[in-house]
Image 1 (cartoon, rainbow, N blue to C red):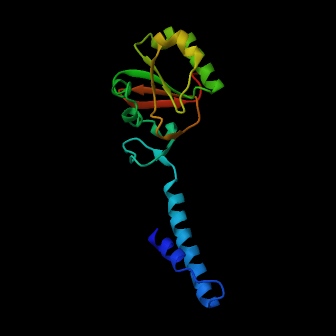
Image 2 (cartoon, one colour):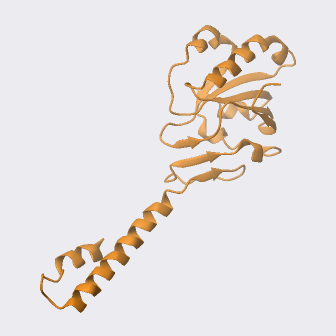
Image 3 (cartoon, rainbow, N blue to C red):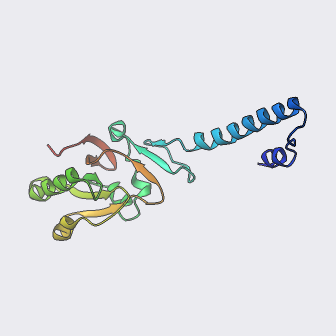
Amino acid sequence: MAAIVALVWFKPSIGSNSRLASLWAVATFLIVSLVGGGLILRAEPVALEAGTTVAAEEKRIILEPATWIGKPLPLIEHLPALGSQLAHGKWIALLYHHDCGNCEQAILNLTQRHAELTADGTRIALIEVPPTGELAILDAFSDLFEQDHLPSNRNWVTATPVFLWLSEGTVERTARTLD
C-alpha cells in the first residue's frame, strides 16, 4: 500500500520525461496487479475435509459430502446445537437450503417415513445451509427432527438437498435423495 501511495505522490508531471512516465506507469501497473492478484487469490474457496480445520479468516467453504464417506463428519465443530450429539449414535442428517424446492420435498419424505427411518433408534437432523430463512413446513413437524444451522458468517457452498448417514460421527454414505 505504501508503494502505491509513493507512486501517486511522486507521479511525474505532464510534459516531463516520457521514459520516466513510462517507468511510473509500468511500476504502478505491477504493484496494483500484485496487490489485486493477492486479494483475488485469498478469495479462493476452501474445501472442508474430514480431519482438517478451516482457518477463521476463510469465508468461502466448499462442502463435498461424497469425499467424507468413511471419515468423521467435518461439520461437527461448526454446529453449535447438534455437533456433539452427531458424534454419537446413528443419524440421518439432511443439509438443506430454506428456499430449495427439492429440499422441502426431501423434508416431506422424511416426515412421511419418520417411523420407518427411526425404528432402530436412528435420529434425524436437519442442518440448514445459510443464508437461513423460514421454511413453513418445519413448523408443523419440528418435534420430529433435531435442527441446527451452519454459521452465517461464512459462505457455505454445496448442492442441496444432501442426505448423510452417520454412525458414531462417521459418514457411512451420502445421497441426494432418501432412497
